Image 1 (cartoon, rainbow, N blue to C red):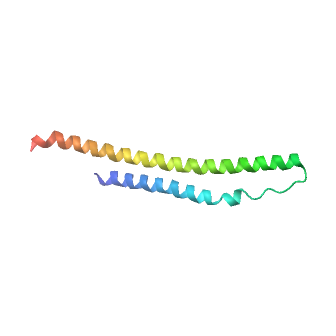
Image 2: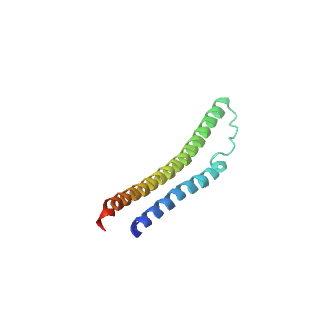
Image 3: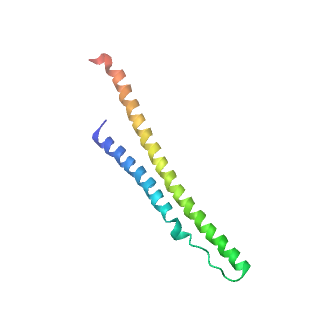
Amino acid sequence: MPADFKAILSDLTSMSRTFHDEAVNYRKLHTDVAPPVADGGDAGLDHALKEVAELIVGLHTGFADRLDDHGDNVAHARDSFQRHDIDVHGLFEDLTVGDG
């Protein structure tokens, strides 16, 4: 495998790991984005505040899930590149066996 191709694979590995690590770090911020909802003194206001707080938590969780998805997609791309390179090298080796 050429050195420049190995560099690309290691970069993709690093990128995938970074996406997953940052998803974990982002999930750790859950308590910072989901503080207890204050009592507004009005049932309608309290309900609205609760709904907005739940929406923010849902968006936070969704973003962390997207980071994980991107990490999975990058890992899949890296694996595909690696399989393709092995297949191409195998093909050339098979074609050149009788040329020696």
